[in-house]
Image (cartoon, rainbow, N blue to C red; front, side, top):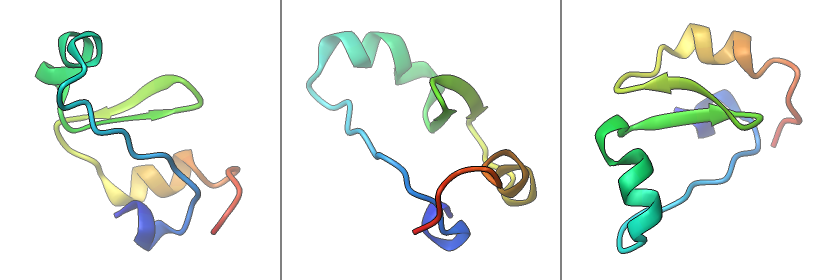
Length: 58
């Protein structure tokens, strides 16, 4: 979905990182925007588009 929306993003695989797994495992999938949690479990595309409209595009 993030590719479809066309914004720059960083995907992080938490597998094997105990600290990240402890912090995020129960929230997956999780999307943070500018360091703040924006979505958990489900990402609504229209809401995502609104939230990232100010971000640099691909």
